[in-house]
Amino acid sequence: AYEVWEEASWWGHRGKLEMESRRPGIRAYIARTETRGPKSAMYTTYVVHVKTAFHVRGVTRRFSDFASLDRQLRAKFPAAPHLVRSSRVLGTLSPHFVQERRQQLQEYLDALLGDHQLACSQFVR
Image (cartoon, rainbow, N blue to C red; front, side, top):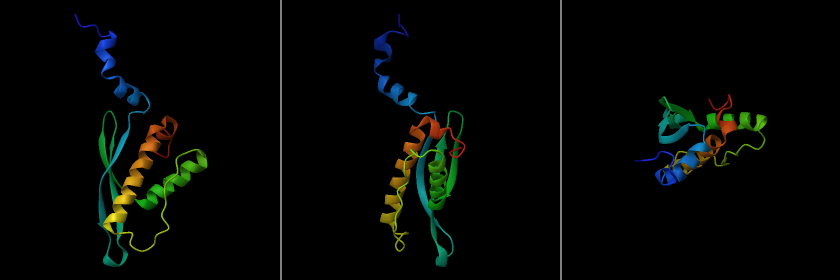
C-alpha cells in the first residue's frame, strides 16, 4: 500500500513544496515587450502574465508604472526590494537595453512576490 504520509512518498517533491510555502500563490512572468506610440514619442510596454490559483491574466505596464509601484511600496515598507533605475535617456528603445530592463523587472517582481507581506499588500494587487 502507498502511504501518503510516508517520507519516501513526498521526499522527491520536498524542494518544490518548500519553495511553494514561501510564496502566496501568485506568479508573474514578463512574457514579452512591445514598442508603442507615435514615432515621435515611442515607449516600451511590458506584457506581464499574472497567474494565481484560479486565474491567468495578462496586463500591460510601462516602466513608469513599476517605478510608481516602487515608490508606494517603499513609503509603506522601507525594507522592500529596490527597483533598479537607469539614468540613461537616449537609447532606451534599443533591444539590448529593453532586454536588460526586462530581466531587472522580472527579478524585482520575483522579489516582491517572494515576500508574503508585500505580495498581499494593496499596492501589488
